Length: 225
Image (tube, rainbow, N blue to C red):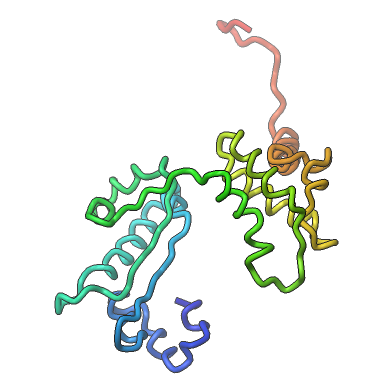
């Protein structure tokens, strides 16, 4: 709740937010929100991160608290605290292992399926941050970059994730001249989508290889080499 306490527009309610640890999130929403139809929407992006093996207990407690906050109030009125979560399809089965979450996603309107983005949507993911967002510095965009990256993403398994990673790397490479450049993307040094991953992965692979214990070529008794 630290971010909520620092959020502009809540200055007169920060004392209320300080008690966020007590009571449900639905009750907190009632205290914080003005009367009327206002809602508190919490966006939980990449919910699959909660299903990592080393955080099962804390993730279950976190989900329990969120789900409790979305239940109807004691008066029967719907909660004004709502959650919108994004989750990769290959992690959906983890929802079934958490009974309250299973009930939430199985009820009517609890799940909205999204297919893979089409070519135009991929192109807009490349151009949008430059053309549609007000940045601190003025950036320009090579008009050939969005269709090229979109076409590359369509040809690669897991292309959307690759494209997102390559965009971040390309942004860093182009920061000195504030232009997302097709020439840089196609260059041998950058290497397109696959090159962006390879450049980041190879130093780690070399580091792992140096840290690994030496392998013996001698045969152990009773084993065939």
